[in-house]
Length: 52
Image 1 (cartoon, rainbow, N blue to C red):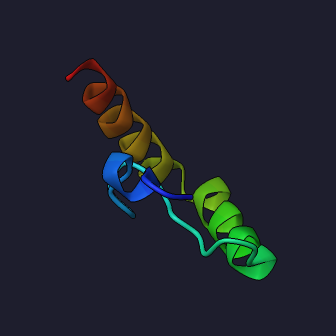
Image 2 (image 1 turned 90 degrees about the vertical axis):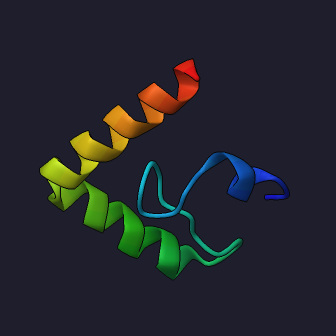
């Protein structure tokens, strides 16, 4: 999606996937579902960024 890279820092405060790549999306969803610490950390960073 155009511009999304300006909002999300991949693997820091979000995960970016290749457009129309369902396999990539599934891999990233499984990763974030199975990694609670990473998910919580990313959520915290994203929340902080939203207040800046």
